[in-house]
Amino acid sequence: MLIKLQELIAELEINNTSGDLTTKITGIAYDSREVEKGFLFVAISGFETDGHKYIADAIANGAQAVIVEKEVEDVDIPMIKVNDSRAALAKVSAKFYDYPAEELTVVGVTGTNGKTTTTYLIEGVLNNLGLETGLVGTIKNKVGHKEESSSRTTPESLDLQRMFAEMLEDGVTHVVMEASSHALALDRVLEIDFDRKVFTNLSRDHLDFHENFEQYLAAKLKLFKSNDKPSIINIDDSRADKICSEIEGEVISYGIEGESDFSADNIAVTAQGVKYDLLTADDRLEIKLNLTGQFNVYNSLAAIATVASLDFSLADIKAGIEKISGVPGRFELVQEGQDYGVIVDYAHTPDGMENVLKTAHECSDRDVIVVFGCGGDRDRKKRSMMGQLGVNEADFAVVTSDNPRSENPVDIIAEIETGIKDLERDASEEYIVIEDRGAAIEAAVNRALSGDVVLIIGKGHETYQDFGDRVIDFDDREQARNAIKNSSW
Ligand SMILES: CC(=O)N[C@H]1[C@@H](OP(=O)(O)OP(=O)(O)OC[C@H]2O[C@@H](n3ccc(=O)[nH]c3=O)[C@H](O)[C@@H]2O)O[C@H](CO)[C@@H](O)[C@@H]1O[C@H](C)C(=O)N[C@@H](C)C(=O)N[C@H](CCC(=O)O)C(=O)O
Ligand SMILES: Nc1ncnc2c1ncn2[C@@H]1O[C@H](COP(=O)(O)OP(=O)(O)OP(=O)(O)O)[C@@H](O)[C@H]1O
Ligand SMILES: N[C@H](CCC[C@H](N)C(=O)O)C(=O)O
Ligand SMILES: [Mg+2]
Image (spheres, rainbow, N blue to C red):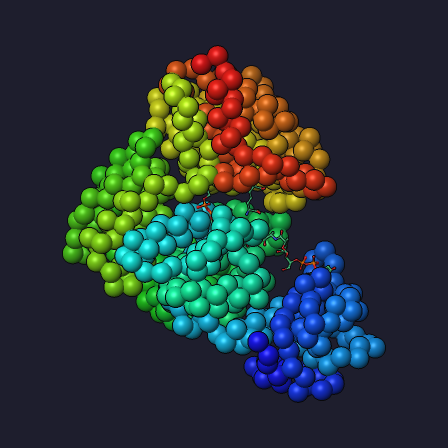
């Protein structure tokens, strides 16, 4: 593909340019290491380093032009100076791939918890309706006929536009994607005109990145303010009113507590799934999900409301959603014939942890043993809160390591324990610390008695453990399976 630089930058707000703008561009990169001959390099001032430092590397790799947001001297390829390189990247990427999102029906899901699950449910239902679907999110990216592994929840704008273009080529008509707060704040989804926008819930997370809760909310709000297409909103969330007040288009509400367009009644939770009556203005319909927990009633209501708003019948939606067997690493049961439950879940926020512990108790009247840690280089304040939840909401906790990244796992665990030590009672007998995650899972499994539930949370579908300087293969489900086999059971 070849495009004139002039055309590529036509929609940008430009401060000044230098060099020949009729130069032909063969591709775009925001990382100098990805630049190939004839590429446009977009220099971004990052959090860790600064793309402007790598312009010479980009040129050495074949860059034909560069977009900058800072004054740079001695660059002898065409240069375009803008105010905001990330926004410029989103715009040139959409242009380069000829605005593929405009040809697709794009559903964006945001919220602290439940994005992945809700996108899987929506995509699963649409797929069951016979549509060609694409999926972009934490677990994987389904790009037309192929699957790509995912390193982030929402990819960079350039990567997203490339995926959309490939999806279109493969005949995809509907794309369901997670829109993380990072993506919204960093303009990764800037040039996407979402057809439906879904809000799951808001609780604390990522307060290492967003300065405070209000900024976190503001990032999420960007999705709903982006256009006047319908928004599907969880009306039971305490921020729903604020979000609805900012929405210009139609609001379709769902919830369990308040009055809403899509609500649930007669909820019955078991380890295998949850059953409820779906209520709309015109219908009452029993829904039997293979996913469990009250939180999945919310996720499924969001999915049903979204697909219904795209003019599909509730009967077809029910048939589709009931076929979905589960989402990898989300309340995933590990069964090796043992007489106690072992569940792997991705809860990694206080809210997610509380919900999942509540659900585990609903599935068993015996003890719930939780295994958890907290990720390094992420929100530190949640650590003590999760420590308290571990001993307060479970019958026994095994505190361990998650992905320590650049931090020392011992320090992270100490911060988790601070919450426990702050409690008025002496909770020292209610938990143990085992830093090695595999050994922690083994200890929890060995402790389980008939009917108990071992809940291993935080890593869900992840198949690695990130120690910063090395990443090892690690899968909670596999570890649990081996621990069960090796136990006296
Ligand atoms: C905080 C954050 O989101 N950071 C993202 C951001 O990094 P940054 O701005 O700090 O980049 P940087 O490392 O300083 O580098 C600056 C620029 O120089 C470039 N560079 C760098 C080195 C070099 O040799 N040549 C070169 O050109 C880089 O490609 C970059 O464009 O832009 C980078 C390029 O797109 C991203 O890779 C990086 O994601 C990091 C890896 C990350 O961990 N992000 C996480 C926190 C994230 O985005 N999480 C959300 C939410 C998760 C959820 O709750 O589901 C997600 O959507 O996944
Ligand atoms: N609607 C919900 N409300 C609260 N907790 C939920 C909800 N849905 C899922 N959870 C819990 O949060 C965990 C993560 O769920 P999911 O992966 O669907 O969320 P996510 O928003 O995609 O997370 P991430 O931001 O890390 O990608 C689940 O394993 C479950 O414990
Ligand atoms: N997408 C989230 C997932 C966190 C999962 C947990 N295992 C951790 O590593 O903290 C993040 O990158 O913040
Ligand atoms: Mg996700």
